Length: 229
Length: 213
Image (tube, rainbow over all chains, first blue to last red; front, top):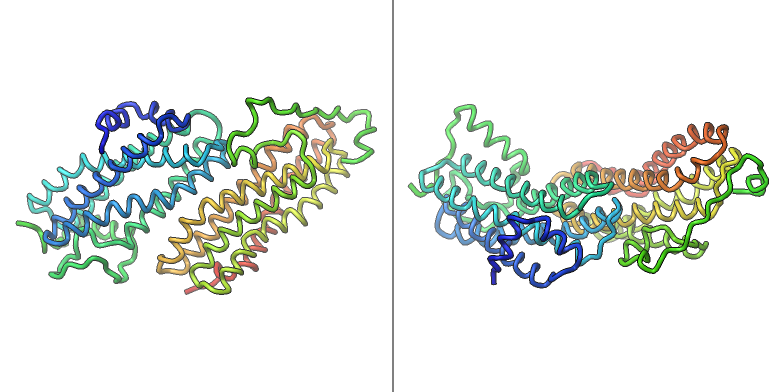
């Protein structure tokens, strides 16, 4: 179950938790709590995002976001282990995995905090583009919180910046693509049917975010189909 | 590097590397293979170089997943080829230049630096392999795969080059002034040559990264 004290430590004292991971102290308990936090946070955030369309989309998004988060972590752990090692931190695989897990847990806890904001905006009738950008902003903030833990986890010493820059590059690519292949989360604007996956060519994640920003600032009406109002 | 070095009056005395204390012994797999060996042997360095190549091959297999079949084998052979060709062609050429410049460096030290650099590049590539496998299978545009694949290989090459220089620099710092002047030109020239050579080998050996959609 979710260890509240552990979650509190993760948010307030990330340096201590990161040190526990590096020193291989109580890793089983840390990893179990982190996994629960990752799944719970992503699940609830997914449900809030999916509520823009409503119906089955809530369940689909709630199911897919934990998959994306855990899948990205699984794919990025070997990269983190290798990048940390080649830049001067030859840790054990257990230490690398646990640091990634606690960073993922911190990420999901921030998503959990953003869940209510997303739900409220949907409830107030926010457009598709607003919800999409709000979700992207929540992801960016969560990413910064996770990055803070990774930086503390790396500790002082040479190669820290190179490790972070290289890893963040890999993580953004993998996370972005994982999220992209499992879309839609909010729903497809202008369409009534709810689909688990879409296979349409839509230009990629970065392109779609630019389209939404462009629509918001150019005054072109944003799709509202599917909003609960 | 040679007998001339040993007998030269202005060459500094070789600094013996102290054996690792018990508490300093590598405690992880990566520390063992990336760390400095107290007494490197030809066999152990060849083993390290081979391991680096095998790890790079994992990355090659990930690249080959986009097409499957023979591309898996081509990738497995092509990715380590750049590293091995630099180790087999560029490093011996650099060793000759070092000997001509009377640099205080033994062949074993050069091999040690080479194998550690290769191991770093191989480990980096192997670490990226799962992520690259997912990306090459799911990304729509071929050009994205090309940029990603070459980007990873170039970063791996830069990591190896940096590790190689970082390993040799302290040993060459004590060389006579004339030798240091020659090395000031020879070392960057070697790095440039190694980078171009590796890039050319990867270009030829990894056809999946040169196709356009």
